[in-house]
Amino acid sequence: MNSHIWYHKTRSDDGKFKEGYTFEKHVHSELDPDAVILVNNLCDQANCKVVVSSTWRIGRTIEELQAVLNERGATFDIIDKTIITEEEVRGVEIQKWWGDYGDDYNNYVIFDDDSDMMIDQYHNFFQIDGYCGVTPTITYKAERFLNTWERKI
Image 1 (cartoon, rainbow, N blue to C red):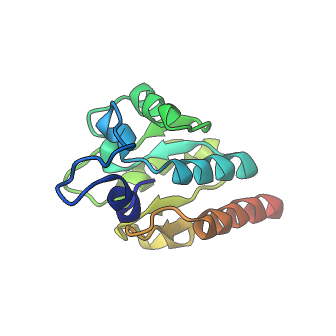
Image 2 (cartoon, helix red, strand yellow; image 1 turned 90 degrees about the vertical axis):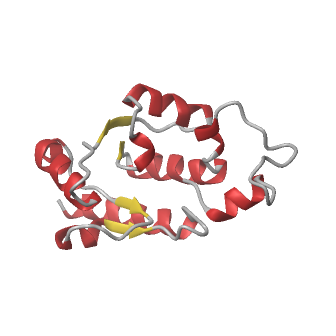
């Protein structure tokens, strides 16, 4: 839920916050409030929860992640975060989580700006452009994927 566009909108060339964009918590400021709204809408429309696999999960509890996102306007629930393994790619971490807990859920989507997913995850993978971040198009496609899959059961 961050992007180069958001970063450049809020920072000057020296990396300091522009006037009107100073936030108390640095990680809070990295989150584009428009992207948070898009994910809120996706979670509402597809009745889904969030598992965080982003690198900013490192050193934070689920409760801390939820608090940071709530401060930025999130209304969705974070139910877990993937286990961090330095030797494995993000797709393996997600696959391990899904292997442990996937029976409790019908389907999932992955949003990431990296492409280090497993081959069998590509139909669930919606690659985010790091330049513009989460977009209405991506969340629309994810919502259609989740809700269409639900009707097939």
